Length: 306
Image (cartoon, rainbow, N blue to C red; front, side):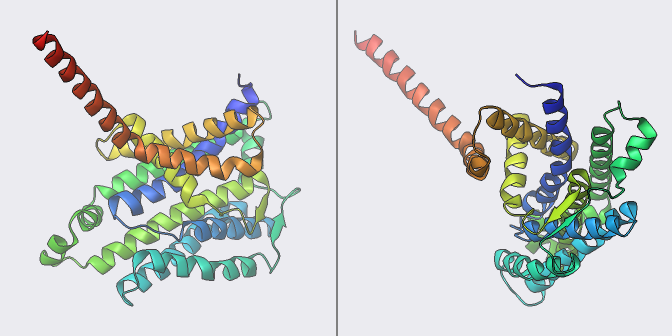
């Protein structure tokens, strides 16, 4: 059904987009904040990375993209914690402003081509050789390193404070922990990971476009929820690995849809349907179990009366 090239492409994109899934895991699951900055931060990472690569600094483009993403997360956190703007509105405001910022980073052009530009992937090609799956190696290495660092961070005192803030902010405040600080740090890290995903993708496909981040929240949530639905809930390692696995599975679903000649314009609709089904899966399963039990009880009652 899948060719080797299709499998490699799905794995490469799965690992790249897994960074967005992990970012949403941090903001949506750990901090319990619906952060809508994701779309703009992803495009910001693309723009910064592409601009740096065109200037001859592809490796520098990755940390610069993360810093830019962290700055976007800081703005969202500032609006939320200092100006009392609701979290969803804070993300939307930042996301709207980032459109102009992203255009400015790309020299007020809607796209930045990098056809003959050196990237981290061309550097890996020189190291591993043309025949090696160098793109997959780079994508997997970046994602695994970031995943390990995130889990290690969430085990520190500050990381535990961030997790506690998402679970019970009132208790955290009663413990003299500054929730504004923990929310700010969490959103900065989440958006830094989102921007890194965009940075790697821009160099992967050798172009950056102002619309690359559109719908990224839906894609990230689809990946996150698919992973949680399939692998269940467990410790932080299980949840992080589930986010990565969900991203890879999502890319295979998209690849399968493309193989079935589904128009590319319909992929966003497919993503929305996947998210809706994944979210509804536990409730649908509970309803099905309830109906099965009721049917079984009715049959037992009928047998006794007979």
